Length: 240
Image (tube, rainbow, N blue to C red):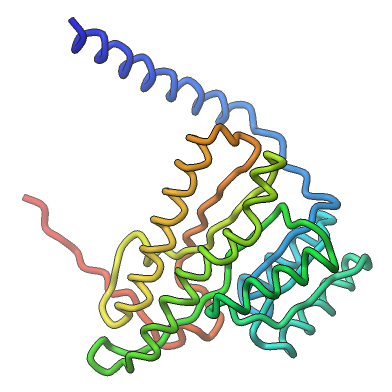
């Protein structure tokens, strides 16, 4: 009897999920307002990080930009100020180093305020085949692309939990969903980022923190120089 009841409950939940999905497709949800919110973007000095900064500036978020490259980070800040003349805060931070993340996060809290929008965007790629890749580069890829998500989230999530308010964006990659040859370290790190996001989402739900949202972004190869010369080989499979 319990099996029949459980089957009924599961069927109802599946059908209800379809109803909600159809409703969201017919009635577009209202865009979230980020005006005045402190938004921290890692890897803001170039590529997607720079595009995120410009887009959030148009939406009047108060930006905190982190990058290991001070010059490129300041260039992004200059572009932002042409759109949004409010203060834009820049910090030089190597997110692959835990101590640097925690100390810079403390400076941000002290000088700017609590962060309620966190975009974990910073990423690196070694560009070597596994047997040709030095161990140090493999460790660096894992630290920046995966471990850094833990450090930044641990730095800012407690206040979000306290206020039940915030948003954490995990920028992974399509290579975190499927793999290709020659970038084993990168694929592994992005698979880790996807797993981090999914587990974090479940943890927030279990804690009844419905005011904290989590978003996963898995872009395809982006023309930022990181993947110059990289090609994804397409294989056609004959399905019998």
